[in-house]
Length: 162
Image 1: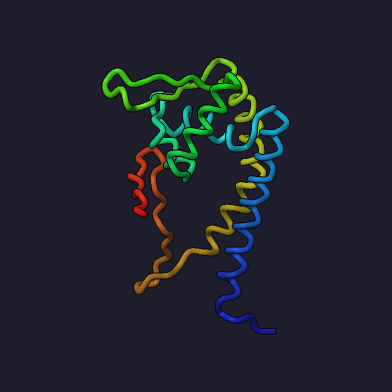
Image 2: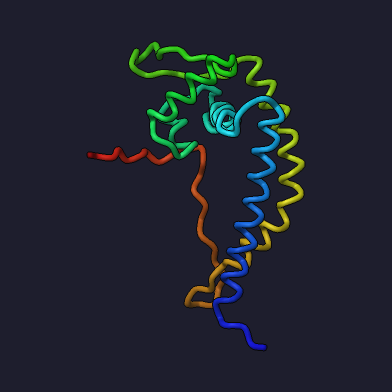
């Protein structure tokens, strides 16, 4: 039976999404087992890994988490109440809140990160092969793939106007 030309595209996307969902499900389960919510785990990871200094602003965390600033403020407040993060005002701009990990938050993050490294190794082959199936051929016949955005240099978020 002859498959339609888009079959490989759809199959690649389906396998890619499936691998991502399995990884995310694993991550959510492990975060809860460690005593934090999946959102708190992502917050800890954003503070430690998305910023170069181990200190992040609310805006940087909102970009990393792909959430609105006011949602991140609430998440940071709950994480601070749980002893996972520390908040302080910037010495340069008192309006800016800087968030860093507490020793407890760092310990939980390191334990989760070790588990995640093992899981990444398991799902890597599926994700890579699925991504390769999604590559397209340009006019010269060369295979190209979209260039990934660098997570370290976030794009400024656009503010919604009401």
